[in-house]
Structures are given as structure tokens and as C-alpha cells.
Image (cartoon, rainbow over all chains, first blue to last red; front, side, top):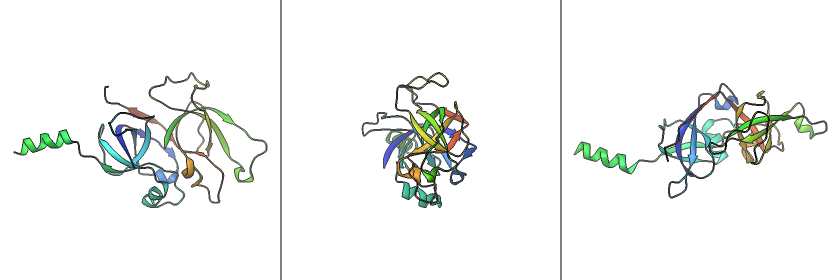
Length: 97
Length: 98
């Protein structure tokens, strides 16, 4: 699984039928230090990740095909987790306290 | 899926029987860092051929899938490395200000 930062969205009307209804995010893969590595990729997202959030993405085709429910789906990247932002969590704690 | 700009087309006269009626596009990887190549010109990066049955034409931005997943959409095992999964209409890309 790779860490990515959400940097935009992509809209497509002509696509493979198995992509129907899946929100496509433009995500920039990150290394452990949080710096950008390589070029952005399109990630299918069902969790509603927001802009500039860090997400956990799986690139295992088999898992994605099972999740999509179509054994012939060309989809590869799927967002499976949204990483909590430590700074935002700290602000929330102060706001509550 | 990865992003690429279609810069041309490929027509085969002799090909693998699995490619009967197939359409191939020449695509150049899209990168926010590198400037867009002028229409029809290739960028220095690796340019590759993408199997396409969505009807993309040169100038379109496509979302293609490479590697093992590219051979998934075919009913029987087919040698395919890059498959055009989506033609991108609008792409909004707002990176964090460095």
C-alpha cells in the first residue's frame, strides 16, 4: 500500500463500465518523509477523501477487482483509508478542552 | 490508473489474433512538472502504445492502466500492457503550494 496526497479530481464520461459511479481522485504518491515521488495517479475513492488529505492507497489489482465486483475491471488504485492529520487532531483536542 | 496524453495512433497489418478489431493509440505520460508537448509532438519521456476501445483520439487526456490489470478486461488471456480505461473530460489538479 502506498501513501498519497489528494491533489484534485478527474471527471470522465466515457470509461470502462466497471468505473461507473466511482469517484476518481488525482493523488500524488509520497515517500516516508512526505515528499512527492513520481507523477500523480488516478485513485478510485469511496471514502470521500478531501483535497490535500493524505490517503492510503492499494495498488493490488485483485483486491480492487473484488471490491468493484467486476472480475474484468481495469481499475488498479483504490483508496482504502484516510490518514488522520496529527496537526488537525491536536487543534480539535484544544477546541474541545 | 495513470494519466497520459494521446499523441498519435497505431495501425497494425499483421498482429496477434487476439487483437482482431483492436485500436491502438500512441500516448505520452502526463506530468504536472513537465510542460505539455505541442499537439502531435512526442515528449522526451517514454512514449508507449495503449490498447483502446473507447474511441480516444490524439489530443485527449486518458486514464490508462498498465501491468497485470491491463489484461483483465479481456475475456480470454490477451498480451496487453496498457489499456485505456477512461477518457478524462476535466482534470482539476491543485497541488499544495511548495
